[in-house]
Image (cartoon, rainbow, N blue to C red):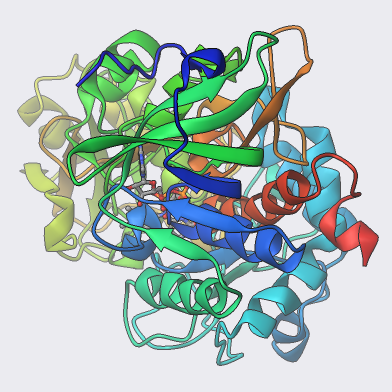
Length: 495
Ligand SMILES: Cc1cc2nc3c(=O)[nH]c(=O)nc-3n(C[C@H](O)[C@H](O)[C@H](O)COP(=O)(O)OP(=O)(O)OC[C@H]3O[C@@H](n4cnc5c(N)ncnc54)[C@H](O)[C@@H]3O)c2cc1C
């Protein structure tokens, strides 16, 4: 096969013959691709999806199907939570980190309720019930959970807390398959053409840099696809591309459990090759499910030097991500006999030391004398007074750790289950238009989902549900914008 490459587009002028003609070509059939296809088709464009797998899915189908929405959904209201657009916006700005995308955050916060309704209108089922407590995903078919750091400092100070993780009705973990099935059914009903076992190898662009089509491998042959209105890259992130991880997110190489399906970064590379700018490429989400069982949240977490580094009541992913910033390759979760329960087997968290005193635990871990023990004694002193002036853990999660025997559970970056996926990607407008490094749109090129740097773009702020919120909502914007070739306003704003 000719040297088609993701690194630069094939010259439009050199295309001898178009094998397939469409108006909007969507690359990737996960949540963002499906959402883009629905809007593109509804806007009247002939729409074709190219998916390298044998069917729809991607990481989206492996997911929990949990979507971060708020501002006062019917489910939040029924459970007695008084959420607002302002609180949601403030939270998302904090969760987006130092370079949160204010335009996307503001739009999403404003349109979140309408987006939730849109999901329901597509046929996504929600039972409408709330599950309290700290959980990762419901084991039932319930809907609403606390899925971020809303109740924890510093988020609670700037945004009135409300639970916002809305989970598709599905018994147990893994409702993402059902989410994609529902969106796929809708896309097909609207006449979207789906080409599976179709790996996109390269974009096609003209002399002026406008993207005019793509080259896809079908039946082992390269096919030239003309996309007269635009190409939308919905190819997911790059957690499974070792070369890209080495180059852009080397910290993630310390972790051994990338999660996804075909997160090969090819869309990001194609977008960059066509002049698009990729941003926040060093950012990734990671979590080790250390909050199972939740009684362990009463424990404290220390690094190899015996020092605490965060309020442990934050979202498990924020705590896990902060673990990676610590010196060394291991951290320890300290528990006393009253709160200890065996960690969830999947987490691969092992007992590293046990002692009748904290000094014994410290010694068994080989730490310098007076380090870990001093940390626990300071924590205990304040916990007895009902506060944590050092890291501001919420009083509801404070417990004096004084009931022996005592245990240090080890979270080891290379051995424990630190799942991760990437958050960096193409820089896009809320409309999905891909920007170059000068901030100009690359004509004919759009992107959404984890191929972009979207609402979730800071590993320390990620909350469950933010990725699918971003994929579905901004996938819709990209599909609509591509279909109307830049003439339409944003989806919800136009309706
Ligand atoms: C176990 C698990 C649980 C999760 N739970 C949640 C959750 O509950 N809530 C949440 O918000 N997030 C969750 N996430 C993260 C979330 O699922 C993903 O970030 C999101 O689904 C990415 O969607 P996407 O549309 O960008 O990419 P994907 O869903 O990965 O779709 C991309 C598609 O593009 C295809 N593709 C790639 N390259 C090419 C190419 N060159 N040519 C053709 N096709 C190509 C891939 O095969 C894939 O099907 C979870 C992830 C995992 C793995």
